[in-house]
Length: 155
Image (cartoon, rainbow, N blue to C red):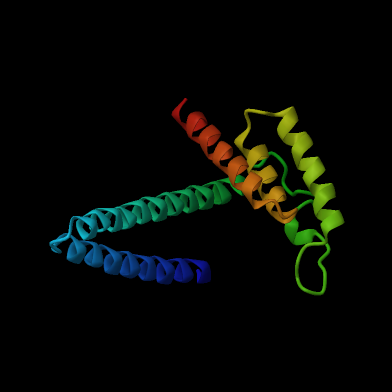
């Protein structure tokens, strides 16, 4: 629940900031100079883009959370036999040991390659990408897992 509170605070702050930017854009539109009016139009586009980005990130977070809740319910294995990020050894800083994360990543990648249409394998691969420090590919794998799960649910 702690993460949810942080998200609420950040969204409120983003909406406030985007509102201030939008208000400044409206003020620029009332100026007599065409340059200022042009800048006002450009400044008004920033909140629109910002709201779209925040909305998409919230949607991604909800979908990821939904899959995270479904995964244990539908998992074919009763336990991951210690192959979760929580079971990996950690450095004194609290981060996952890189060598252990890479070994887990290799197993998860092999699982995803063996079952390319299984959202569960792609969800686990996305988590392994995160543990290995590659968040960009992890997000891409998670988006693919979400798409596979939606297609699975629709069928």
